[in-house]
Image (cartoon, rainbow, N blue to C red; front, top):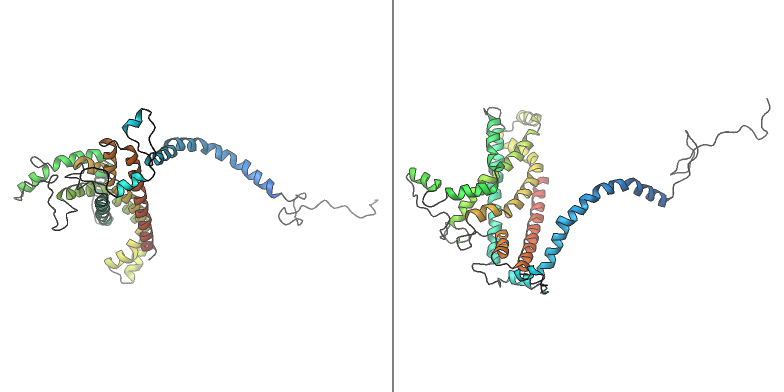
Length: 349
């Protein structure tokens, strides 16, 4: 058989696009230019961008535009007279100055007292929410408790109720004359003429920041908020392997040591975001404050969000209210960042 003088002809060996070296299994593929790779990636991702475009447009209309409009209002003297088309005047940062220097001409208004009360309200509620939630979750996680599922179901009832309904019911319970709280105290032989919502006398001597009405709304919000923490803690407890407790028992660890070294460290990854979320909800708990005490008496239980609402509803100072809302945002942002740093530090220890 005749053969080519140059020798047998071998098929072209494929090359690796990245290295340019020959590889087996197919023809040689030239390296793809960098610009071509970018264009191919854009073509591949274009469909994904088309899918998220409607959501982005809706978000821009219902979120980004109102935020931008609010920022614009905060640097103007926008009031009710501007609702009919009259352009407001630019005032710069004057609204922020008036808020921080208590120059609004509103009775019982003191920004720093509001801020101190709001922070105190949030911290005290969170302590009760977390402690009660974890304690009851631990109790219902025991194997010797009969009817655990029943109790878990009824304990989330306060959390499932609308906050407005909760606030109205508890306001009636704290009524001076026919409220369930005073009637219960009277049946136990205790004083039953307590003015829960109208007394201005400080409960703690020398600490006038917390009137009696503070404890009324505190009881309400604790009843309303601890089931959420219980649900989160219960889910986290279910994910802890039982082998860890068995090993701890073999090492001679008692219940308190197991709680300290196993339960609480393994609860923290779930409880940290729950605490942060709960702090935001409590800080802005409008319904409980507004519908039980109305910020009274004499504005002593007013929080920042209820004061911002009054700037719109009663005073009709829309520009000032917009600036007030931005201040609330930055205050809450600072609190959240500080809280995140503190809680993450506890989580890693």
